[in-house]
Length: 146
Image (tube, rainbow, N blue to C red):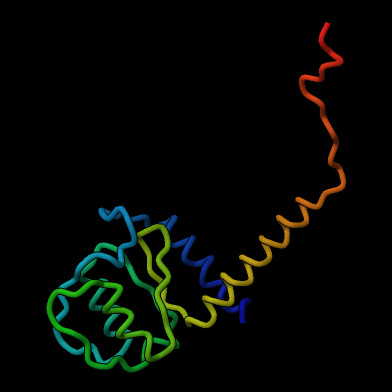
């Protein structure tokens, strides 16, 4: 499963390098308010509608584009709230990269990838701290005073 997600993440990095957009938001672009009208019906229609109205771009693997989206609130809405209402029932979530690209991924896959990488990094840091090459150094010994 993790091997399926890594190419998507690599694609995010490549796309953000080739097509950088400058975010006017100091934090996550998901905190911006968007005006949303209509009923998208599917994840694909929602992504197309949002990409036309916001500065950042949202990408989705093809297999998610045809998933249904339930009725969403109309008017001015916080982007993360809108996406959560649309994607959570399908087990999906948006990962924001460099405040310019959002990618829709399965929540369980996203958790596995970040969880596995976190614990791998933690294990490596513990191994480094257990190193047997610790040498005692005396600084300012009274024996060195003349």
